[in-house]
Length: 158
Image 1 (cartoon, rainbow, N blue to C red):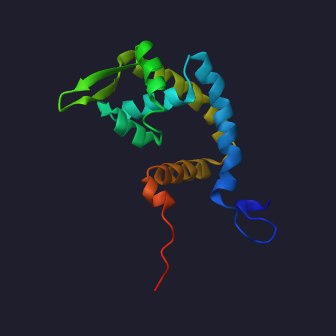
Image 2: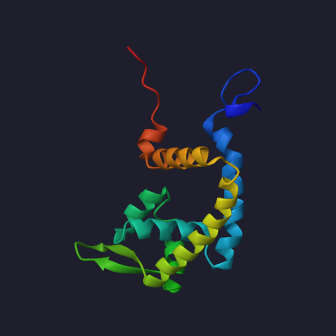
């Protein structure tokens, strides 16, 4: 593989193919951290989502994290049992529950994130400062796009 993700035919690799080894390694590095703190990957995803969008419904949370709303019920049960989140009836819809992260959930999320980012810091040190900053800016910008933009087929030009 040549610089810039190009193959020896001068073609750029697909982003998924280019990023997959990195993402797999990052996930593998996060799993022991999560286990030490008694969290699953999905539990951590939920805590991060609730930190950024408090008082979310289960349906809104599921949509935000790309999970089936029935699949996350067991995860929410575990997080609630550990007093990391609360579920309260929605005053505007008694069938719905509003989810919130607790102070203990926030504390745990921050501790896990700090440990994960310490490992990431070692990885990012492999890049020159300017490349590191550009990579993080580009990753943040692309990650902030709505799924509809990420998955949208290319529109043919007229």
